[in-house]
Length: 459
Ligand code: SF4
Image (tube, rainbow, N blue to C red; front, side, top):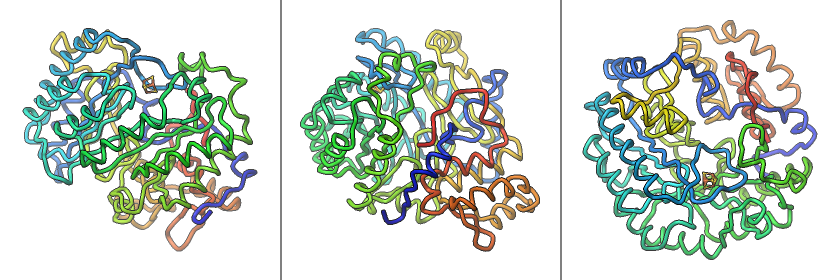
């Protein structure tokens, strides 16, 4: 399997629940005593910093027309466009308020529309939103921009794909999950390969620079045979990026999942076989492993970013602009501004109440202290580059790595003995086996603790 080693016994040993480290500290540690005043302070501090980090935008559109039963997203099921337009009006107000905090923010190289289903909205509404952002932030038409949008192929046409590129989106992420009809019926998401590939053809035709497919393994009715067929069909479209997520069945946390019949889920050995199959097929087809569940073609910018040291793990997975700040717009959206993470209210009523009263909708967040910043850098390095350069971390933060992380280095010894990591000089590196369990290694450096909430398992 090339750069991977697949040891089912070891995977079973370490397949415990833990965070996915899209941030450190994770959102589970955000505090409700962090509010709009803290956020504005973070924005002021950011502006006054010696090196001002570039700013990216995330816009959350929470609406979906029908529920997928595996869903763990913050979304609202409705068919009412009026309901969505009430939300859009608030989003426009929020853009104005947020823009006040970020005057002279510089060029926006990255923007992402996620959900929910952003394409639940008619394209003119999306165009109005982008136009408003253009008035309040410095959007760019540079071909290097990364303006992406999540696409549900059931909600778009080839024409609307062309319109979306005319608005400025040059990257698209397509929700696929699985092509097998029985799986699709079980997850309540019926979408034929022909329908999806017709939309992908339109993306190519419209000049979309990078296409991502999202797949999920561990869904009901999946078998090695059916998933193999799905992967073969996906590879015919040759998307530049692929994310293959593990389905985490947490019905106590996500109401939609209660409608999935647990007895139809694949057992643990089959889940492992599905993961192994995906890795074998994708690497054989020339895809490069980026980290966690993400793969990309060698020509994709993510691969260059990994090579050149500019890869960043964030709430959208991975991106190519390291050390960016992020403004999160919309209900439940999370942002990172300077030394702080901030999240908007998760409930629509709370979000509306704040915006209607003329206040930012920040519901919780956390300030990063000096220790958080060191640990965040270590975890980021593991998740992006599969190694920790102890000398570089020592120099950057003015610490003695070995003394600072004495307890963690002791805990790493078992992982080293099991062959998940190896040490060369002052560098700790993941082995081909450890790559699959990178978040288990990252958990060793997590001082916030991972108890207190339900996490998905590592595989
Ligand atoms: S998986 Fe995506 S499209 Fe399906 S209900 Fe959840 S947010 Fe909506």
